[in-house]
Image (cartoon, rainbow, N blue to C red):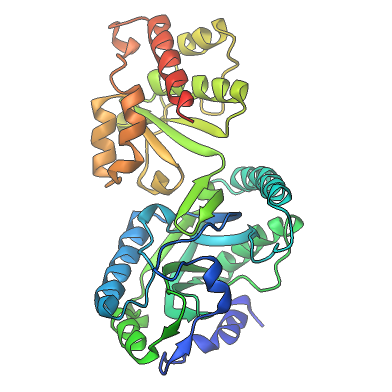
Length: 380
């Protein structure tokens, strides 16, 4: 039996209509307060963040569901865009570790994140350039806790790649349930649910199988996250994209400076450099950049010896974006980045002049970026 056939058989319940009243699962009370606010629920997970198209479709589904169900009061507070993701592998959660002390539980979360971050980095390197294509499947009631959009791998190859990644994390936590790819749209409030009204709303937002949206998740976007509750997630490490006009001087120095300082401070944050314009793609970074970094005791990461254009699909790879130039901010705008993903970071690094044209020296640019990187890391 093929993997896709097995998936269809295992998820045949997804076609059952939502009708009749039912009570939410008792365990939902540990995640959602009676008033619909999110309760403390710390843990760790491995996810793929969505690209812009996927995010826009998910938010549209959310708006439809919340509008249709507004008067019923059966849904918890809406999940913000920053929390939307496709889970690859759950790691540690209170539901799986009830009896531990708070201190021991915190140590287990930290240990799981450390191991998972190494595995995720290996996967990103091994599968660079590969993507997993997923087809929107069905909006369903997931174990009487939430409404989710189920996702189905488009091909056997997509499923094999996804399963291979999933199994890599079993060394940390082997789960008692199979991988069922999905994106959570909304959580219920604990209590009794009017299934007829819920079913009507879901039917209105339901996927048309003849025109089902297709989403792409890139290996480079695989991310380990620590969560405090179901609407507060943090990438570990945080991955910052530094962007300047050419991607040859300022962004390269900023990324290397940040990585150097973060390592000294033992902070889980990394930087990469990108160009705001495609015309410099493939141009080699000047020796003066590498020399300036080395003169200040920084061993530069020469993984990227040439400029890399900030591509559309990379939006989901990074935690945040730091625009150093006007061109970078315009690129962010064209990518339809939410302002909260770049405005705070950019205020630390925006405006450093470009040594490419002799406005300042590489040494002066380095000192300015070094000072600003320290100020940013102070906020963490």
